[in-house]
Amino acid sequence: MAGESLTLIGFWGSPFALRVKWALELKGIRYQYVEEDLSNKSAMLLQYNPVYKKVPVLVHDGKPLAESLVILEYIDETWEQNPLLSHDPYEKAKARFWSRFVDEKCVPAVMATFSKGGEEQQKAAQEARENLKTLEGGIEGKRYFGGENIGFADIAIGWLGYWVRIVEEIVGINLIDKELMAKLDAWIDDFLELPVIKECMPPRDKLLNHNKAFHKLLTSSST
Amino acid sequence: MENLGNKFKTIYINIAIGLTRTPSSIHRMQYNILQKKKSRAMAEQNKVILHGMWASPYVKRVELALNHKGIPYQYVEEDLANKSDLLLKYNPVHKKVPVLVHNGKPIAESMVILEYIDETWKDGPKLLPTDSYKRAQARFWSNFIQDQLFENSFLVLKTDGEAQQKALDQVCEKLNLLEDGMKTYLAEGNVGVENNFGILDIVFCSIFGAYKAQEEVLGIKLMVPEKFPVLFSWLMAIVEVEAVKKAAPPYEKTVAILQRFRQSALKFSAAA
Image (tube, rainbow over all chains, first blue to last red):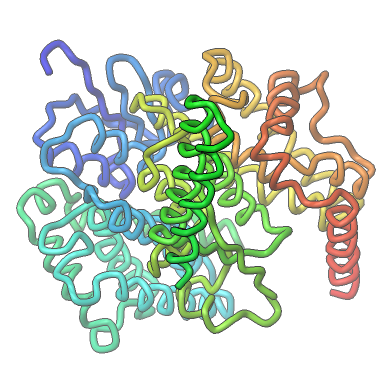
């Protein structure tokens, strides 16, 4: 598609921007990447996402799109090579179901484990573990959420394992139990080893240090 | 046995028609009989069951979608204090309504169900625009209404005094954002009227459709035309849509349940 302009506004440490990056890379789509300084948001970001003022934002021929899952659906509909979603409506529904489950259930529980202390943290950790165990049910009998090959849900969810392991290290609480969630654990490793996926990942040390600083900020403001 | 009876019925009717009607009206009646048979067959092939609760806005969304697309379905009212085994089997993850069961396959989460309905029943009105960018906008704003307005509106119902004022301020802030966003989107003729009715209308309707009952219970008007002219006229257009009128529960029943809910929420927070 010559003459088209495509820009991804992101942040290197954002898992939501990473979802979009993966989708674009997997489909071999050419795009321009703009790194955003979240402590000093650009006029461009505020213009393109006035509602949430967040990354990622995808700008296609001057038209802005926000919200990573909305962007993924748009990418899949606009560039049909290497489809992320199945053609079958029921399989599509399952992929969307699990993607939403992660955003609405797993992420808040993991975030609470990361940012709270004491009993609140323990309760959040327990909830996170239960949600992660439930999530594992989505891969049952398959290699990936998408079946034999990765699909929409894998891209939407795959970052979680990487981030959760970092959270575990920082707060010293186990969330992904290697024995009780063996299938989930194996899927995480499997997914993160895929070449296109691996190439886009932020370096672990950089992400760990970034989140350590973030953790300090979150926990010091609550005392 | 039933098929045989129907066959005889058809033959008898055709004879009766032949004796008394003109050729064009014979064709019309035969056509109508055939259409009825077709939709009965369709209903049997496409068995659709909706597990719901009459006052749930999430369930309302699915009802609106099914009504608007003219999809025949069986409705099962769930007692949420005593959930059926079927519900727990069909939605083990959330154990909630709505659940749509299509030919035995369960689908949960209202937004997921809406997309499934649109992709499975391709005839008739579309719930999402055909243009990809407009689809993205419809999804974006539907999610916004759900994430940013629903909880806050609920909070207004559950609180009073300072807490309620705080919740109200939040709702107004989000409504302002929605008003701005919808100015362009609605001006392009994307939603609201009967033939453009889609997921965005459905989600908006599921929260504000019962605005009259909400106003009566709260003694507060949220959807003020002077403050939110675009949203107000959109809402007025929505409540006139056939599918919406069909799915609207009786006014008094809605007022009663909102009142009960508010009373128990206030009691609970007073006791805490």
